[in-house]
Image (tube, rainbow, N blue to C red; front, side, top):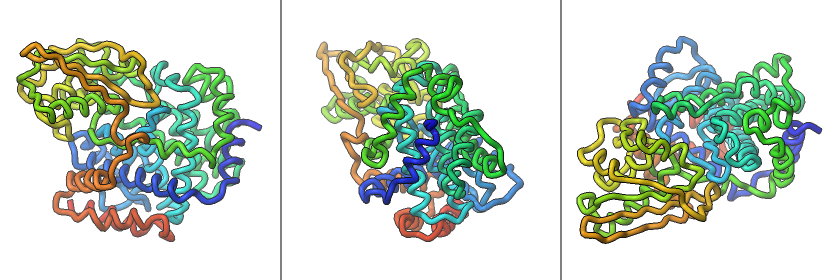
Length: 457
């Protein structure tokens, strides 16, 4: 049996989701909705808002920041792009997958379009997130090392699985949809050369591709059955790993028994997740009384696997500003030390006075014995002007499975993101509608709350 067929058969044989897994999935889904609203109210999401406003078609699917619906594939494109625009969306660290920006966008649009219950929407989202994570674990770092973002490459296939499930397609049509999605899979890291905002399109296009693939499969188009393991399939073509299909097959065997989604990490800073433990380390040092004016220089010990994204070339990273600084290790650490914060406003204007100067007095080297990518660890060393040297090591990022966040922090993040778009709006009706989604007969209450927020902007 081809791997795609094996995945479909395994998922369809599973019973109800465990309660703890359902709760985790809902928290991630809710976080993604909040982040999408934060982007809709930010400069980083402005191009998506303009694109949404220019659409002349109407449909059943909600769009963050829009008071009317659009066709589902268009809504999935825009919402997926918005969720990823701020670098504020969740990550499964071990697989290096941003899951919700693709899968929540696809599930919401397909659920609204097909009149599915909240439980059906969350089930599809959860199960295909589990498949998505296993794709990354099977070829750890392989996609990224070849310049591809797994979020978009594998995301297209998993979004197709979600869309097929919520459209009620049979196993053969679902297999075709996933094969069709492979031919739409795309997303490369060249955006890093100038910090271009096209990166946000990666998950949006993947969600869009998945919905279109399911529509085409329903219409009778066929796709390769060997989309995962074939000579030109996902693992061999995009990760360059001929052994990954066998590893992935072994991981499929424990679907429904091992739930990796519970290890996915939430973000509490709107920048690349690799930077978060360094920002936290700087914050803790400030809590101990250190101030930017005390610092002569600083040195970052970073996992080697993160270097190509946040540390190299260092000469360019130290001069980054605006959106591009979301992937700059020296600048984000300097922001925390100088400004005392790294938040949405940090990337929307010129750097504060002193940030660039401090970033220029920084260096980096590989972190020996790093647990990356299972953990996002970091060590920060400050050399102070009085001659003292202080260090702080972070074993894993806050919000990851090993350091789960407080619900109050998640609620605060959600409320702040809604206020970013609509300062006078009450976030609680939307939060309540999302909380009730597992028992809801459809997505109508969530749809209404989403559009109410947009109308109050």
